[in-house]
Image (cartoon, rainbow, N blue to C red):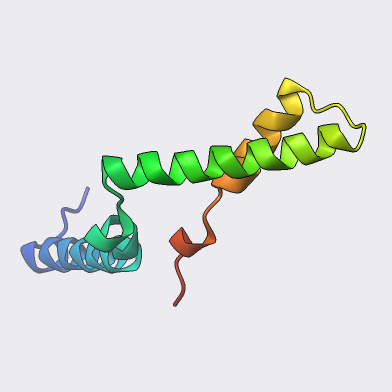
Length: 89
């Protein structure tokens, strides 16, 4: 059984470090401070979302369409998807 030389082991370690640094650079936009909202901003966004969804549900009900809790939940989930958090390179 042949053991790798110290040079080969250090070179392999260097490749692993380089790969990890590359991955961190690629994922850095996920952890950027500007991408995170404060609790107050989240509460305000939730309130606006709820008001809009309630308005849409009221409009649907006024037109004779019943909006179930499941439909409300699905609408709320779809509205919660924020395309501004999708990274672009």
